[in-house]
Length: 422
Ligand code: UD1
Image (cartoon, rainbow, N blue to C red; front, side, top):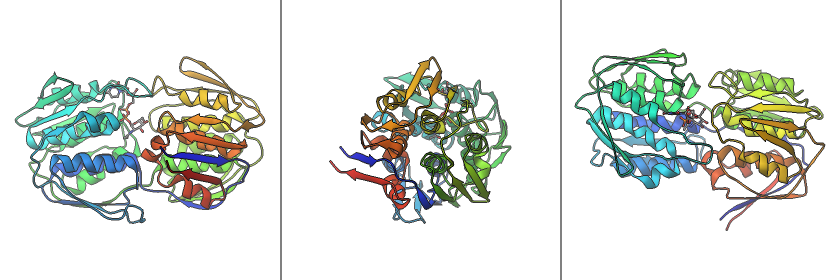
């Protein structure tokens, strides 16, 4: 298995380009199931999770034409004119929970689907009850058989659905299902993430009627048929935020190209409080790190609140801050595994339920550490950038799920980082 070695102490300088958003690309690629016509996506990032979803779609029978995802164009064409297999197998759903998103479109277009339940994962239980509740309200018959959700509906019908929590995945699954349902669906307490808006933009280009995406009430008027689409995926706000933290952490000066400041409001405001200097344009953020970060408290919340996917990265910044910071995690119940690894690198973090009390230390010291999930793994890379000595990070497949060419991008900014293949 590959390892990443980081030798700390370099200030990052220069420019780095953000890839297309993984969390927008996944549902958008899946939405190709809603039409027999070709769907062309640009800006698809070169990530393990993308290869997983393409494998899943290919397995269903979708024709997949993949360009070079290492190129900035990142083009993928999908055509679901024949979908003989209406099943998402356990093997793929267990490696990537977003596979569960095929349920809504398969049911909406073909009237049936068998999708493995995802089970728990490292960051928490992550149930799919809200996805299922919504589909049931739209008239689907749902059974759980041998670990698979087996759903049937002659034609889904519009319904008023109240999500008890603004789940991103449930909002997306239900939007796709509702696009081909009979009548109007209203999703209340919908997720407002930019990725939900990007999916709505795609559905509308395909001929659907989706209104209100980006607010907490999304209205979808079902149509009989959808057609092909060409779309460029929005830039990855979490990847952008990660490089912004890296620059601030190392006292560097970095321009993050493609970063959309309007998608990063809560995060950028917090970062400013830590003393980093930021200047923004429509599609870039320049950050200059100034001395030791000032400690700040933060609480993760659904968008537009502070994103849970940037919590681990901010924890590293707070680990070397000049005071005490309280980080409260409200989205996932078990998302502090990086804290224990960071403590092995000399951080002083105490966990109390869903709160981490982070006492800043002057410096971290390198240690062998293990990645446990996607965002945790990048936080260990960040810690390595400011630790004394060489940090060795194992289980980097977690990193490859969500960060395209991280070692290449960071070494382009002057970091001393390498991947050892094994
Ligand atoms: C998406 C993102 C992930 C991000 C998360 C929260 C993708 C592919 N992944 O994940 O990177 O961390 O949003 O911003 O877009 N929940 C339920 N029942 C449900 C569904 C969710 O209780 O039916 C709970 C989950 O257990 C979790 C919370 O709601 O505690 C948020 O989950 P959700 O918004 O659904 O996250 P994902 O869509 O899985």
